[in-house]
Length: 121
Image 1 (spheres, rainbow, N blue to C red):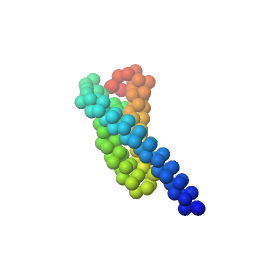
Image 2: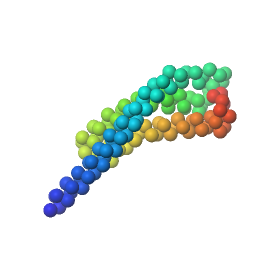
Image 3: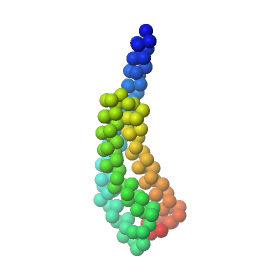
Image 4: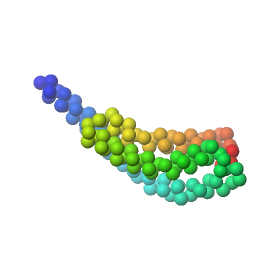
């Protein structure tokens, strides 16, 4: 009886994790396409004098450039971990692109608040 309960809980956990991984992989995978466009134009952020030494500017460009790499690694690793039945770790790896997006948003907010929207701060 306890084996059936354990397997039933395991099946529910597996299904919830699978749904989350499918949604996260789809959303973050689709966001790679606009990020490739942003990567093409990210060099323009260094046009203004002094912007090459601006920490928030470098942080923003680094976040944009590393997004596709981190997302691809996260998606592959989360599904590998899912197959190995490490569900919590799979969810964590699927959510790694959120950190990259948050770092980019924080850099943009810093540029607007402390640098008045200028890339040379």
